[in-house]
Image 1 (cartoon, rainbow, N blue to C red):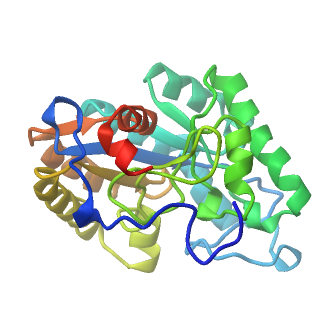
Image 2: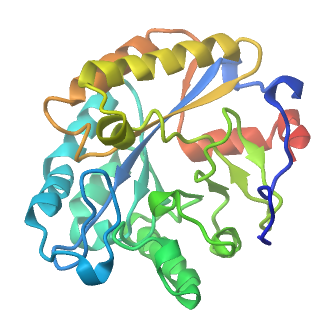
Image 3: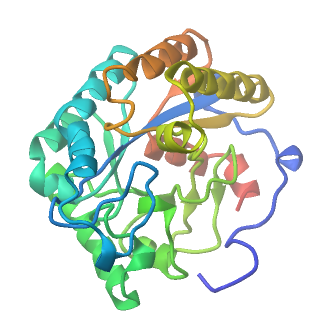
Length: 300
């Protein structure tokens, strides 16, 4: 991707697009993206607001923040799996590849449940924009290769740690076999990007219907987060009667996987899944369908 004032895609106002047909006449394609992440005890840790601390000034070990996130992998992710399975939802896990090395039990269970695994850096402790330029491509390949080896499936999707990209990220991802990316949170429908071979697809993700900013930035309570999810769905469901919409719910095991927070997701899924015309999908399933449609031709 070359530096430019606008993104590597055309500006297409949603009101001027053809109808996006979803399978079986669905109005909303619902996908859930658990961010399953790894932080090393002997490395830098973000704070509760995910703020970045200069590595040379970071306190190591940071037991409090590390333990909170380790709770997500020891307890929270299993609670998410149980809740989602009860509602017939398979996750599309944004996966740090270090999880494969340190918590293979998590990988085994996600594969057993039919979850999709997408790339999410090697670790969230080091974003692509924080490493030396010459290290970026190898880090991406390491993450993809490790996930493929551990799970038997090479990731088709990518969500950057912190949604961070350099001018070269999309090219590196394409070379690694990635077909869709979720960093560009600027639409409610998929679109094709002017980069990659074959060209990359942008799939709607959310930093709004996302438990980390909702909890730590917006200061939303558990009932308020539940209401946010349901209100998002209500609008997209209404609009989806005219043209299909994609709804992403982003959760982190160390946040929504807490015993006092899981009810927000449980109740919201009960509400959403009580409606007809909801397609419970993985990210790659949505992208595969999109690529078969006339809508995709118009969005290319």
